[in-house]
Image 1: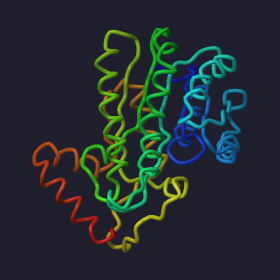
Image 2 (image 1 turned 120 degrees about the vertical axis):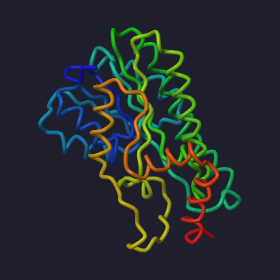
Image 3 (image 1 turned 90 degrees about the horizontal axis):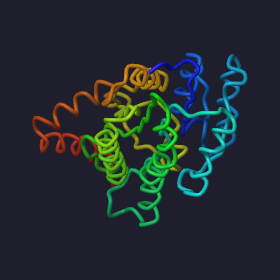
Image 4 (image 1 turned 180 degrees about the vertical axis):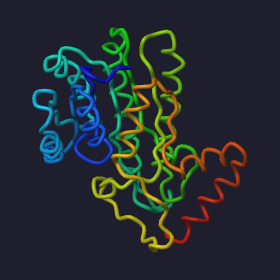
Length: 265
């Protein structure tokens, strides 16, 4: 799919991967409707994209508010005249604790942001995407949707739901002009812990895995859209877990459990 002069909606555009995706798209000549819960984050995104005047609009949005999500397509049409792509990047993680230490409010919040928010956006924009001669729908899952990570069980469950939703959309949209892309990023340096209101586990520096930059992940996502790829694994850890989960799923689960048990109560 051509990127230049196309209009993309990007959620989570006020920081991290969503912000980097926005900047990458703008650098390739696209127009972007950047959505995020935090207006201060969107202001940072605008400040970092001064080379793209007139091609970026910002939209303060709570993706768990279905009425607000349903109103967004009209706002984007009014600003840009069309919608060629939707990139659902926004997401949060949970506290690093076992499932039985979580409250039901915490569990419902994780599902509301990561799954319901993604579903609301997909449903809101699908009619517009299907009208275009070619279009793109991107949902970001996680390597946590490949292998469960203790301490992030509900995060993984929410992203697993995103995974199956996206695979179903791929099946249902194969005979349309909408290319569906499912993304599995590995560990990435973002502000997701702060934005989620959680404390990261205290992992010794010598035990820390290699962390991707948001720019690296964003470039891979935009390239996948350009090439029309369906399934995108980003990072060595993601490729390793994907392969191991296919060959020896029980071993993959045990490996993740062993790595995390030291850091969880």
